[in-house]
Length: 462
Ligand SMILES: Cc1ncc(COP(=O)(O)O)c(C=O)c1O
Image 1 (spheres, rainbow, N blue to C red):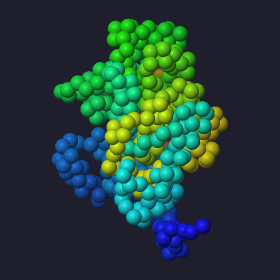
Image 2: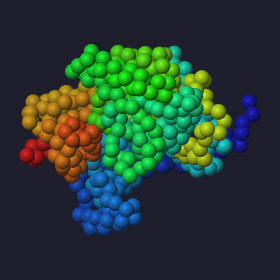
Image 3: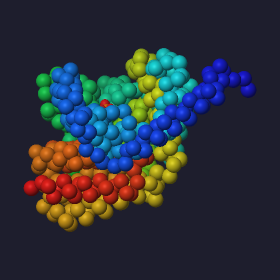
Image 4: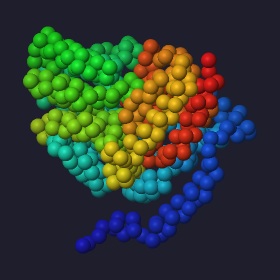
């Protein structure tokens, strides 16, 4: 078969040799990263000054004093002050492959040497086609029909596209259902879906949303009845006005609250009776349960109309059924993702699918159990300071100091100083500390070390 000029370039032995040399150099320098390390004394002053400047340039201080140096090794990352920390929050769930992963670096180089920085909906390279096929076939492998994949550059934008698709399909219905305490992103539209007043303070109203209480594992039957009752109440109050229901099957930003198949099926039944589209927001859950998509984990394949993904997928996307296809002009973007991003997305997703991560005996579940076991032991040791854990797979939440927001925040800062990155979620009085593990880089011994640091941090706090 005739080859393109690009095929010749990408297979040029000089390119292969250059990539080999880069990997060798990376490995050599990475070998100096051996574990958690405090800042290099000579770098401290400059680092402090730089952080101050960054705060001025961006109009506010960073949450953590974190500026990466540009190298890491697996779950360990070097900061520009020379310190090394365990990254157990991964940019709120993006660096699933940890830091300076050789496979991801190779994918990024392949993207970087291609002809353009950016792909967009007018012009995409063949790598986008590979990614679309992978996502489409994986999403539909158990009978789901969300075969259309529309790439975008943020989770919020993937959600915006999902809302537009659903509103157009269900016109003139203009209301939406969402779960209480959900997070959907920070665009003007999504700020009115996200159930947090502080995130939309001063913003004009964009979307009317009716909130449904989330599943409660301590009241399985009661919470299903309560949620369907509230849904029916709103449908009676606003007949024919609900276009869709955005569902996050494990609430991430609220602190790893896990739903239940029967609960979702009960709500979906009400949706189907009233022509309401079922939209699953997988921006945070994608690749973190035993299945690639959390709707597959909860066996909702036959019921999903629209799905959004982000974070772990490296590139964001909206997937939808044929009967939800938008009319031309409704959605499009100049940027769908850089060439390096798209190559890395394919590498990461393909690795998760083929590398033994999924399934009940996969790596995700094994690491979850290992982490959970440690956290349970810590609860026994510090019963007044830590409880839980909560979550599924690569999403792990824990309550510290009874869910007090100020103390939980103080705990995360102390943990950071001691060498582990985590983050807070939810809000007072049910604040949680959460961890989004870099599953492709973590081994059990890393979790042992992280938990020893959590133990030390709890002991240091009153
Ligand atoms: C469930 C969910 N949806 C949407 C978003 C928004 O994604 P992004 O920050 O990429 O816009 C997030 C981000 O945390 C999320 O957790």
